[in-house]
Length: 228
Ligand code: ZN
Image (cartoon, rainbow, N blue to C red; front, side, top):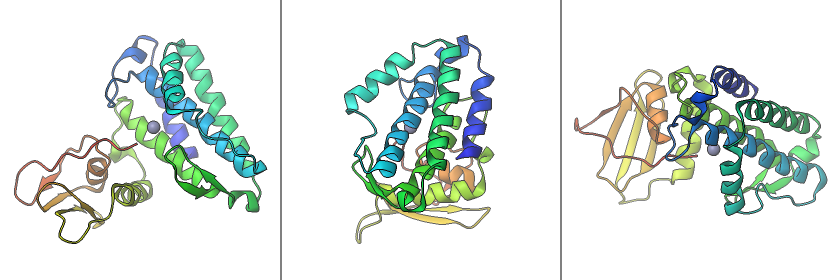
């Protein structure tokens, strides 16, 4: 999480004010929208940390509509305001986590997606956000710049969330040619094999651009929707 925050922070620092209105890898979101979302995510995860620390339920977001409205209004902040919001929201989340006791780390909280999970999974939720969105920010970094252990954990996470293959349902096998990692997911398309470097396979599974992916039949791999 700290590594991802550093990567993202130095990426944001390199962006001038005009660059913030340029598009990202996410439909309809400028870089300012994406940065506002990442800041609001730190605040939202901080709500879960508060919940774990006190036992007082505090949802990530007031509502899905409020979440989107806050991203929209946040995107209109100045570059300086966005940079300082990013720094302060990340620092506050980290400080709140550092203060958790072992019992509080094991306390259960409810995410905006309706999943119950122990607080010790919150650092992973944040790591996912900052790492994947650093690539989405289009500052020249790709999945190949992310740490291998993170990529493997992300591949596992995406596949678990996208659903395990059911019997008789067409399945998709994604295999990394450089590390040998292998994932299997259900697919509405015909059975297919997808092979490529670890970074590209995981980018593909996450619904991101995936240079160097090859399929068993030589055609294009089935398109997966963006995840996260
Ligand atoms: Zn996100």
